[in-house]
Structure formats: C-alpha cells, structure tokens
Length: 138
Image 1: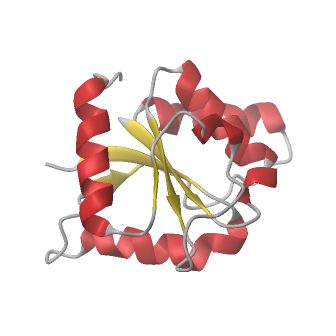
Image 2 (image 1 turned 120 degrees about the horizontal axis):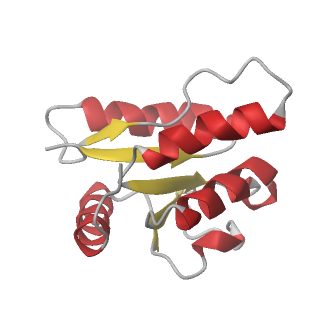
Image 3 (image 1 turned 180 degrees about the vertical axis):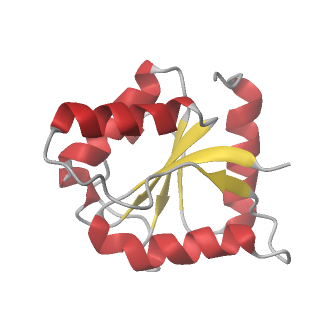
C-alpha cells in the first residue's frame, strides 16, 4: 500500500525530483508512495494563500521527504514546509541528491531526522520505520 508523502524541494532540483517521482511509479521498484506535494506552483504572490494550500497537502500526508541539494537549506519555503510538517506532527526524512555523498548543509529542521542518500532500499526502509512510529493524521 502506498504511503502518502509530501515532497519538499527547490525548483532547481525539479528534474531529479521528477526522476524520484517516476521511480515511485515503476512497478519494478519497491519505492511506493502517493505524491501529495505541489506539482503546479500556486499562481499567486499571496504568501498566506500559498501557505494554506501547502499546509493542506502536508496535512493529508503521512510524512514529508525533503529532497535536497547543495542550496536547498537556503530556501525559505522548504524550511517553512518542514517546520509546518513538524507542527502538524508529521515525521521528516531527508534524501540528498548528490551522488558524491552527503551534502554538508541541509535544511535545519532535518537535524534530528534521518538523512539518507538516493538508495531505494534504504529510503523504503526509512519510510516504513517513520510511518510505523508516528500514526498518520488526516
């Protein structure tokens, strides 16, 4: 059964994020999640309106996965999304998008949460552990 996941990321990593999404749709891959993240940016400059829309998606998710590259930690919205997930009682995990190993800087809300590389069996295992620990809220 697919886990409801909110993906938090920066626009510059969208190609890798779409690859990650594609792996979740691949029947030959153990990564199985329903993507509750924002696929079309909100057509607004109203931060409150955007925040409400993102909050609704996070609230429907079982956990938030931050797909992060070397500059993701500087994103106001990524940090906002991760903090909102914590406020809503959702677990976090980070997946670094660098084949060269862990990225030195990551969004600060991930400090106490698992951060793993792009290793599908490890990502699946971590998702399962986090979802088991924290009951999903609707």
